[in-house]
View 1 (cartoon, rainbow, N blue to C red):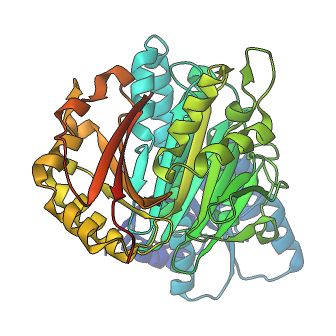
View 2: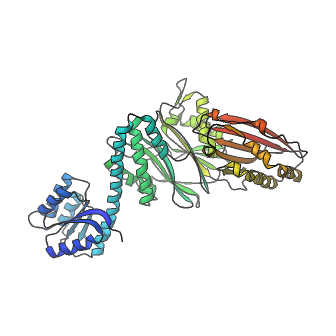
View 3: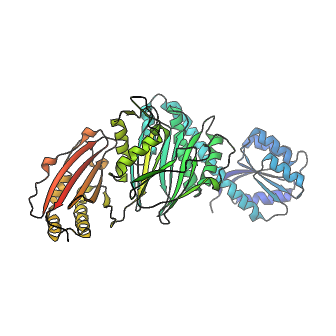
Length: 528
């Protein structure tokens, strides 16, 4: 068994107990120091600053309580375990008041002490990682103030990909910092085949300090979730609050909305710490609603605040719903008339676009729409995240699938188009007409004139039943990090099809960050 990477000071006046216990602890812990009384223990503590102190109460020269009081004044964060043969109320109350992390009555079984040591060691090791990260961030701060381009690149690397597609979940986002760097943070973490943690937060302030805090906070959140295996939103926020207020925040705070998503059991459990509320668009009813406007306080407002299970919200998570998370920079943006968008304005834009476009392109589409309507999205950090379940392949709403490299998977479009046409009972002649389209024709769909590597382009396609006797293929070529001029479909290269069973028409639109190509295929025969 690997030894715990911590240091322990063991203070005990009885030689036999001290030597035996130190010998046992050395088998489990890398570094052990010993002392025979409180005065000697305090002297050793000042010299070596151990991670954990284990001490008896009744000792000559200086007792354990006096020593701990002096240690707390020197370094208040040190973990302490108190051992005592006396169960009197006074000693226990004094120990609690001092703030010991564990209290064990003598005689005790060594495994009881070892279990407590292991539990505290997990927190000590995590705290060390956070402290190391904080030191690195402080060093980085000095170096990056002179080079915001570098800082922006580091931050962009830490943010998730703008499009994440799991087996049962779409996650897509758009992020625009008010300067080259910003204080917004968001991520989605897969914790099992059907479970995810999704969060969005906003660090107080702007610029370099907010951006560097964002970097440290994001690292801390991911470590708490992945290393400590916490799943309950209130537990995660409580752990974050302890670490951040002690190690990172100095007059700072952050809002945070954290969601636990269970796709198998179709529900979401969330806790909102002062953040704007979730917006939910329902594809079936075409309605949009605000979920639970009330929330708790931001992290850092009250250092000792404890979030509770009662502050969590639970909601159903259905296939026809799209959930939107965002920061205040989005709904506080103003148009050229000085009118603020507001949450009601945001809901209006979402409702306009969510019924027409798949989840994957909605954040980009909404951002483009705001710019087209003369809203200034540069005055504050701007983040919009959307996620939804993947449609079932037999969904009445149409078929959506994703291809990372469409040039090597062109047969997917053709196969799924035939499958969907049969499912919708289009004529046999129509289906044969689709089957007769060669790969050369489908290759023509992605004959692009581009100045960027193919690996930086994402492809998404959707097949749906259009009004009348029509099927519609929509292809989206997404390049959020590239100017729109770098991606342009050349429709002249797509072969013309003459068929007695189907007509084909094409329409191409280029937006900032992505391009939309629509192919309408009309059935000349009545449906079966």
